Amino acid sequence: MRPSPAFPLSRRGFGVAAALAAAGACVPALRAQSRREREKVTIAVGGKARFAYLPLTIAEQMGFFRAEGLEVEIRDFATGSQALQAVLSGIADVCSGAFEHTVSLQSKGKSFRSIVLQGRAPQIVMGASTRTLAGYRGLRDLQGRRIGIPAPGGASHMMATLVLARAGLKPGDAEFVALGTPSAAASALRAGQIDAVSVTDPVATTLEQKADIRVVCDTRTLKGTLDLFGGPMPAGCLHAPEDFVQKRSATAQALASGMVHALKWLQTAGPGDIVKTVPEPYLLGDRALYLTVFHKMREGYSPDGLVPEGGPETAVRAMAGFDPAVQLGRIDLPRLYTNDFAQRAKDRFQA
Image (cartoon, rainbow, N blue to C red; front, side, top):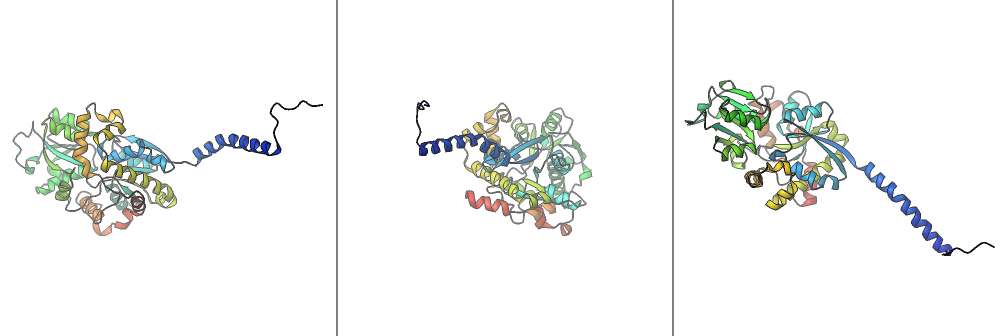
């Protein structure tokens, strides 16, 4: 005669226990499946710690991309040109960079499209050295001078040429010196090696606070942007090859949703929220300075990720005055961007 089990089970109890055991065994499998289903996407950016790309950092740090089912890898490069090249060479899927990339690429027969806007102002400052141009009176004083920029062909270079044009000067009337990064440009200016800079923050504000430069053009504000470009100027955005936008539209939507969520968060975030969220190395070792820069730039961030009406035309006009290959009548404006993804995200988050 078999011994009775210490805890006898009825037929119904045995069924429940078996079901629970099976469910428990499935938990690791379900978790593994969830990991497999998370869409992987790589974003290339030129200078992730720069304020122009703060929305990207917020979306990453706050988990907004993961909330959309994405596993995002962000690869950081020294310049926007290098980040764009990473996408062109297949190292990354999407570029976080200047809207002008889409214009320049289309003029060369390549189709990239902006899927969500980060900035509605270029957030670039041009300043004249208070050391080598102590007697600066106006833009024409920049004639024959050396102007430091991070890289040739970038947004800072384009802005500097537009500023010169306001004084009737041509690009060849000054010497542009590519120095790799805004920080390198600042060092060269302080050493007297260049006479002016066209750079982004936090470098611009640091130079301004220490009286190293006299600001001659400031596109951190909407007013400064309108004064220089004559219309709304789309700036930092996520842009990708047309093939990516079409074949991976669900991924594009998830990216746009994560970014719009971050943009909405930035509209109401307080100083404490910012310093808690941004990685410590980004704070420059000076939280007060970081927050000063943030408040200077805050209105330059897009509130909803949408490319503004008239923005693409403004961008093409600006590029046409900088790059002879760009001609307004030959650029297909609707192919430069889509607001479909950002609009759906805006409706969802009420941004």
